Image (tube, rainbow, N blue to C red; front, side, top):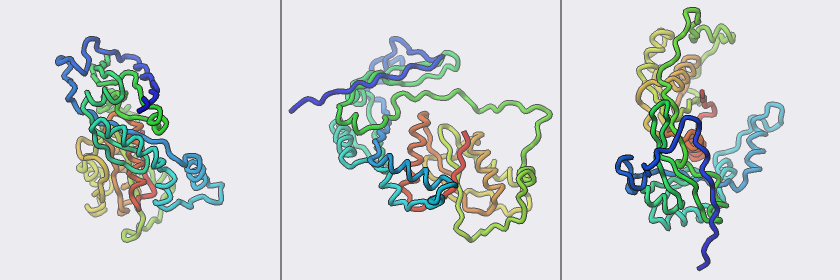
Length: 307
């Protein structure tokens, strides 16, 4: 059989402050706390077969000046527009399968697979090593240059899980000055002249927030928010109706806490969902979110994302 031509993809340079821990190869150094049996989850994003048409459609229905504005396409058509060519899916699935690894489809254009470090190194013809941030002390596992068969490379748009680095700790908010003004629900209503709204609690309106990385929610914070700023509303209004994605109940982090409190505080009684995709690769987490949206036949048309 003919040997497939390999395409080399260089590793992106390390950001300022990060450096490789020399002599602590993840494939063999016990001191690094990693070995060939360590597990690694990779996401393979495939090129959409109808990317130009998908882009035109998205712009057309989102442009208030156009006649197609608001004419959102059905879920099945959206999946077809965003989907990869079946031939490309088969090529990548067979390539992963040849490494004795099972893959699963996430949406119409992404595959997920869990590898041992040894299997990933062999498949991608790369070496993994530990890198460290001199300022924060954070340590991460990172691949070097990769080599991919040309037919697989032609099918892929990206591979997630090879080069992501953790963000610095952002759990401590900056102190507010004594002159800062509390932006409450009442302040927002007065600022934007929101009056006379009658919420249809039995209607079909839906809204959601989306959060990523380490940005988890604490439901008790939402209850406290309603207790302090919306005390006349029923306790049931301070409950998220549905959680989607990874387990997101944890410490109340800033981004999702702000989003859920204010989106529900301004429109109490509307069905509200929280979508969460954890990880250290923000781009892949966003791709997982959009893939999950495409997989569902009915989703909230309003998603709040604050980053």
